[in-house]
Amino acid sequence: MSEGKGAANRREGVAKGQVTMEQRDSGYEQNYQRLVPGLRGCDFGECAPRLGLKPVPGGVEAEYLGRAYRVTEEGVAPLDGAYADPNHRSTLIHYALSKGEGQPSDDFLGLFQLPGVLRGRKTPGNEFLSAAMERAFGEKGHALFARAAESLGGEYLGVHPSGGKLWLFRTLPRIHMQVVFTEADEEFPVEVRVLFDSHATEYLGFECLAFMHGALGQALAQAGRRIDGQADEAWREPGPFARQRRPRDGDSCPGRRSFRAAGGLLRFRDGTFARGPRA
Image (cartoon, rainbow, N blue to C red; front, side, top):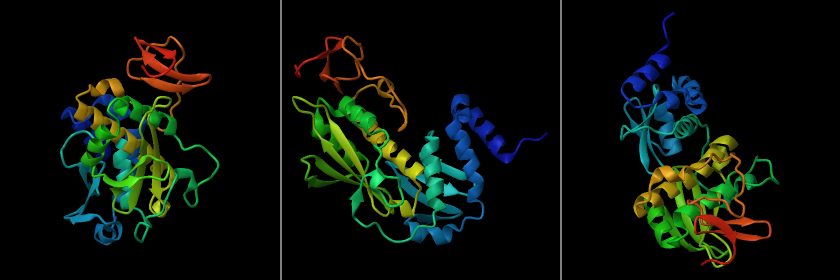
């Protein structure tokens, strides 16, 4: 039996070293491959101005989290030629196929406050997003975060009413996001809140927006580590719906400096977690 064009392209990508066998076979990569046929027949000429994308022969181009991508009937490819997360590529397919119209509203809400989204639940991944920010920016605070945000095209808007520093990210042309970054103090670690333009659900469904929530946080953390010269491999974050056990007294975890826990704040000191104030 002859293999399909998609399978042949994946095999060729593995042969060229563009993706590993593990990456090719991941569930997210398979999901991306299932979405690619939907691009056939897409009217890129119509969607480019409506979605704010750059028209190019045979497709469109878009900036997403600091990288440029081209979307064609063959799929999504980063212009730098390096491997790209399949969730990022899937998000760009959903966006290119979106029927959304209109401009961003500049009214920002939490993910579960967006129109059409089930309310009353905790934003997925917010706890782990703040944990990632604490690991990446806890020592150097907003000074390092600002450099990371600017490297991703972020715009500083000033102080949020909550006291945190407010940043705007035009993550996709019609989907803007805000990040409220609150520095660590003597009692609590870094805290981060991610907000979406209230029109975001006109363009993408909840699942895509949830992945964008985590993807922006991960991109910021990676940019901060890169700028600060930290080893990236030591800082891999779980997905937005992943679950982890909280650290306990005596746990060893060099990548984490503090954690809110029952009975007080655990802080990393001398190789283990222990209760007590910041040293």
